[in-house]
Length: 413
Image (cartoon, rainbow, N blue to C red; front, side, top):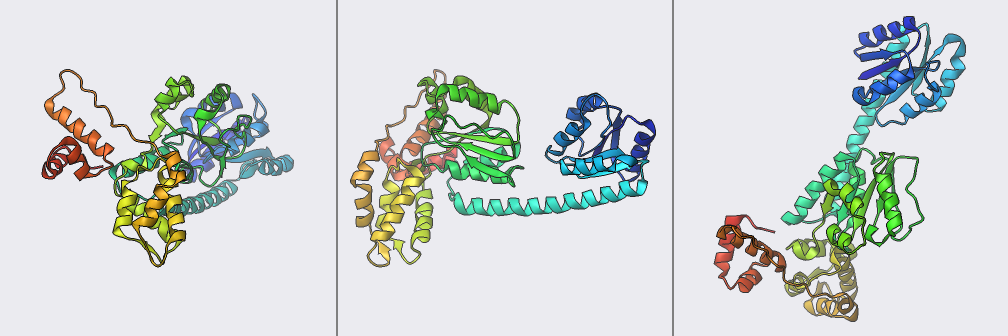
């Protein structure tokens, strides 16, 4: 461990250096708090030993601040006739305290106990993260390359511990993903808080540790977005995970999002694919939701075809609702296409239905014919929701040609 000693008394400062070095610590020492503050950012100690009579500031307050730093422990140092100050430091967050004259045996004992505590904490954290990964595999179901790519980005973003912007249509499991980001991060043992969709008066917490999820930020007033920008630009005990239900660029163009807010999050945007672009994930999710609703029934092949052909404007949330209602309407142990189609064609579905417009493929002068072909097939495949027969039909090519081109260009969804 790296240790920083802050002690204005040269004899005890030297004694601490010797005792800590003998115990295997990497040690640096300074006389006062001003020098310590300058050293902290680059040295980043795991342990700070701070004398409560250190000059250049309030040493007790400094000790309390350092004890709140993630992964950092504090030992207070007091005179032998001021042991009550050491007890007070423990009450304010210090791990323990030492006294002058310094005892090598006590230094070694406290270090041994601190290392054991850290080992236990690291073991518990490893178990916790493993459980989160298991829950992630069970809850964020999907095998399509688009979805697996998004999950890989989510795992990477969780470790970065910086503010995140989730960009995806409503119903793309943004809150579930925010919870996974929280669980996989170093703040995962802290609180997960969700701020209401339109609660412009609520402010992120200023104390505690964890993650704050802010959905539908494009629906918040611009002055409130300015406040969010100020908050995420200041590192604090709570990490921000924000969500927008449309393309951030389109929301900025429509005046719904502050350009500066999107720019601040540009390097940490996680794009979530809509369900219609996830191919056979519809089957996997439908079976999983049906198992949760009624494990005694199953979809027949035609019912699954009907689910696969639907546009899913409400994404995973809509699919979950349709499966739940289909299981309630099932007559026997098989759900047929009649039940599914009745739910997909009902007034509720018609109100939400929206026809997906064919995408436009822009071609720059000088692009190779191979690149033009690859991009055209990719966009058509996405529009056909991964259906290769539909892609072949739209491009007026044989199905065999489409399979060969997809393999040649590596275009599987």
